Structure formats: structure tokens, C-alpha cells
Length: 102
Image: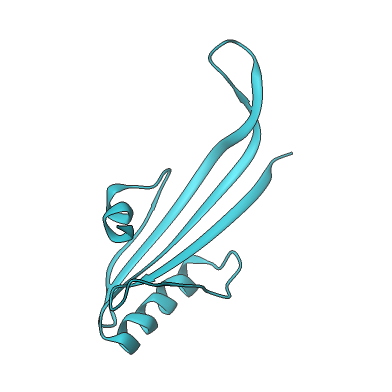
């Protein structure tokens, strides 16, 4: 049986603070709408990303096994002034999110 861990990060580019969202494992549509709303409200670029990790028994190089991340689903949304710029899934953090998080 896999264990699941979910992290949601929100960043608004009008400041250098990270906004906490009271949304636990929200579906994509809700994250897109929340990102649009925040970017419209602050008249800036905003980003919300959800990192969903599934833990289980994973194989390691020496032939043994270990308990670790066996699957990851990252969802990234970027909006600017209420307009959707990007909404995509990937199996790891990508450079688009890293640039925004600097």
C-alpha cells in the first residue's frame, strides 16, 4: 500500500512572500481558479504548484529495496492579471517552477 504526501505552494510576484492556501489536495480546476483570482486581485503574476508524492518500496542500485518516493505528480499553474499562462502536469519539478521560486 502506498502512502501519499501532498504539498501546495503559492507565490505572488508583487512581493517576496509565500502565501499559504487552506486547500488540501484540491483538484486542478480549483487551483487554476484560485491562481487566476490571486493574480487578478494583486494585478501581478502568481503561481500555484502542487507536488503529490507517493511513497512505497523502491528498488535501489545495490539490489536491495528501500521505502521512498515511487511516483510523483507535479501540477503547476501560472497566471498574470487574471489570465492563465500555464497549466501543466509533470513527473518532477521543472525549470518553470524553479525560476518562479527564486
